[in-house]
Every structure is written in C-alpha cells, then in structure tokens.
View 1: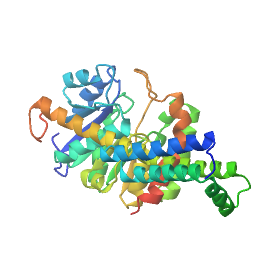
View 2: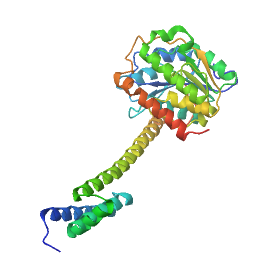
View 3: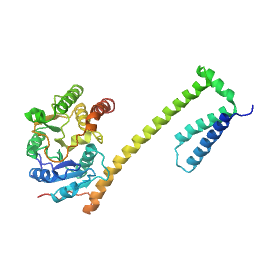
View 4: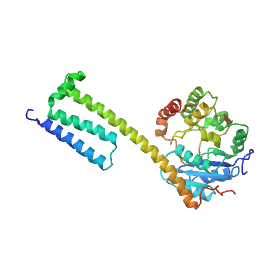
Length: 125
Length: 234
C-alpha cells in the first residue's frame, strides 16, 4: 500500500464514522436494520476504496466508466436515490400515522369530555 | 325525525374549519330535519367548536388540522361506531341548504347507496367562477368515463350515504376526497344518484378555496384518479 493521500484519509475517516455511528444507532435501537445495511455498505465501500484505491479503478472498468470521478458520482447518485426513496416511504408512513392518531385522539377526547363510553349522542331537540 | 322512512337512525356530519360565522345557523337548520348532528372541527383557530356546541351539536375536535377528508373520516367513524344507518354530509359554510335533506333521504330510501346534491342540475352553478366550473365539469367528465356513471357534480360535498355503503369504501385521503370516493363507489358498483340542489356562492365567512388549492387541484385530482384505478379494485 502506497502512502495515503489526503482524500484517502478523509474517505477512510468518513467510512469509519458511518460504520461506528450506524452500529451505535442500531445498538440503541434508534435505527432500523435496513438503514444500518445501507450505511454498512457505504461505510465499507469508503474504507475499502480509501485503503485500496486500485479497487475504484476495477469498479470503474466494471461499470464501463472512463474516469474515476464518474464512478464516484454515479454511485453517489444511486445511493441518493435509495435514500430518497427510503425517506419518502418514511414520511408517507409518518403522515398516515399522524392522521390516524389525530382521528383517534379527537374521538377519545370527545368521549372524555362527555364522560361516556360509546353511546348514542343525546342532542335531539 | 328520529330516523328515515326505513327506520334507520340518521346523523348529519358537518366538517368545519374556521366557520364560526356560519356553523350555528347551519346546525339549527339541519336539526329541523336530522336531530343528531355531529360537527368535526378540524382544529379551527376560531370559536367554531364552541359555537357548534352551543347550537346543540355533538362536537369532535381534531388536535391537528388535516383537511376535509380527514374530518369526514372521523365523522364517518363516529357515525358507524354509534350505529347510525344513514349519514348525511353537509358543509358548514352555509352553501348547502339543509332543506334538501328530506330529498336526499328519500332518494336513499328509493334504493340508492350514495346520493349527491348537484349544483349543475339547476342554474346555481353559474354563481361560481368559470374556472371552477370548467374544472368541476372536467373532473366530472373524467370520473364518468372511468366510473361508468352519468353524474354532473362529482366534487359536491353535499351527500347522503347508507352506512353499509360507506363500510365498503376505502380510507378517504386527508384532502380532495370527493373524486376518489365517488369513483371508488362507482367502480364498486354502488348505486349513486344525484338530486338538484341550489348552491349559491358563499356570502359569509372566508372561502377555503385559495390560489394554492386552485394550482394544486389538477395534480391532486390526477393522484386521486390513479389511486382508485391502480389500488382500489371492485
């Protein structure tokens, strides 16, 4: 292994940071396994590419890219799409849950205010 | 009137958002025809809930503002859990005249599952802006083509339902519910009928139809239509 350039050192540090933080979040049950897997892959890829820059050239040839920068950008964009989809899914689920919670809470509050179990409303004139 | 002609208990569901100026009058008029009135206050900033309570309605207040569809969902759920057989739905802004309620109920008794009050079966639609009229006509045309119906006012919120029919319909979206619900009802083979209802443009209170509503309308309609076509099969 040749002496590492600054970009490799930064890549290695960021990769290790992803791995450690992801592991800690899963351990504290603050992150789901799917997210952990994504960051595990990204972190590992960064660490491997930083330690062995030749791997990036191999991937570049494999993907049919002409420049290493293209490979990095392409993989970055793909990752961004995956993350975007995951966030979109999460927001949709949260939005739906919020709506349901709002509905449940309002009905329970109404019952509580009237101090009754489910009974026919007595608002006949 | 405790129930309709078939002996089923009737409830009027009124979704309301910042309608303190009109809601009391609407409730009083509705109670001349339907004794059980539920107002679903969609987290109004004004005194809508208080005014509605004082006018004699049961009030369920949302904690968060989620839109008319969400308010209706809460109202339907309340009605179904309390065993009501017929649900009349009417706006709180005073545009829907409660004197048509007996006609809506009569149409339900005639064997319909859903009855819609249409402003296009009379001249009152001319009071609304032409852009809105064209929009309603266009989406009604699309709904008719896709649902095999012959309706004139698919976006009208003045409706009556059999509880059994409502149970067959899926979860309403928080906003822009009308096209989706009507299209789904049609595709599930529910019997839908329209009656002529005069709906003059609102003269009191503040309209909920804003520029952003107008601009986002086509996209949301497209979303509603696709959702029914793709995910809500009969």
